[in-house]
Amino acid sequence: MSKIRNLLVGGALAASLAAGLAAAPAAQAATAGSAAAQAQAPVRHFFGPVYSGFGGGEDFGHRSNFKGYWYKSDGRYWFFGDLFDRDRDREYSYVWFRWHDDRGSHTSYYKSFGSRHFEKYGGFKRSSGFDDFDIRVCEGGDRFDDCGSWKDVF
Image (cartoon, rainbow, N blue to C red; front, side, top):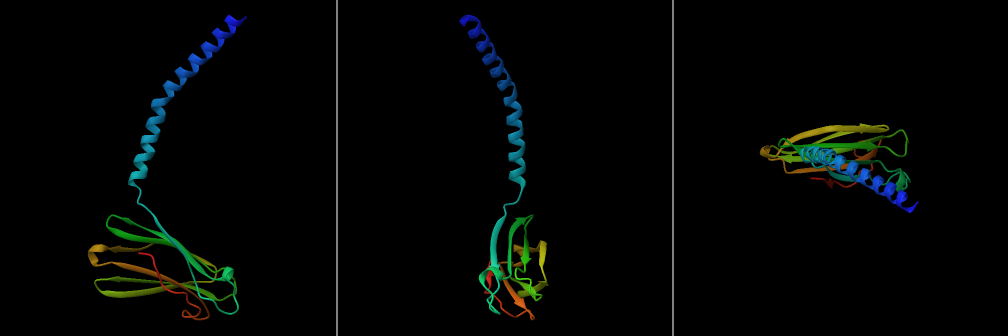
């Protein structure tokens, strides 16, 4: 009985080794393909959350915020992110973008009652002197109300 059991166990072991060796090249090819895809994807640089200032008796959990990431692709810098109004007090949340290039300093702002997504903002080029990008968040009836400090993200 022991010889039959040893033959069965040995046969099963040999079959599993053969199956493993046959599957190894396919696994290596799949790993190499995913590694090549990762090498081509731009590296994301995450930042935030950047918070608004305190106001109206709010606690920290009710402040508006912005968080996102940036990456460089084809010589351009792209910014992505989300603005969130967490207190739902029917006042706007604002996000300000400030950047510097050869033509000087520039600002723009956007507002939202709830949340707002920013997809591929910018496209700034180093060859145009782009060297700084800052964000701040405000909330209230005016775009200058309850502003947090500027956060340097690039």
